[in-house]
Length: 119
Image (cartoon, rainbow, N blue to C red; front, side, top):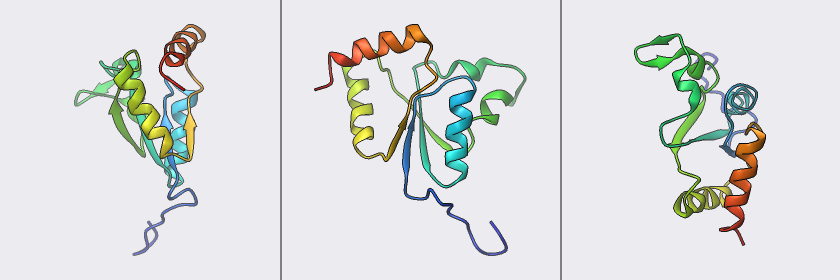
C-alpha cells in the first residue's frame, strides 16, 4: 500500500493451486501471491511438514510462515477420490497450477493414484 492507494499487483485475478512443499516451491508461489495472485496452498491432513520446523512462536513455525505468506490454505487428502476431485475442480478455475517440489517417490505415487480418477 502506498499512501491511501492499495496495490493489487500485476497478477491480480490469477488463481494458483500451490501443491509445493519445503522451500523452493513455497517460496516461488509466495512471490506469485506477493504480486497479487490468489494462491491456495494445498496441505495434506496433518499439515505441511514444515509446520513442525523450529523455531516456533505462539504455536506457529517461523519457517512455515516465512515461505507461505500471501496464501490461503486448504487441507485436502490427495490419496482419496474426493480429495482428487477437489483439486480437479479447483484446477478448472485456476490460471496456473504449481506442483514441482514433490519428492520423486511422492510424485510417482501421487501421479499413479491420480490416473485412476482423471479422464
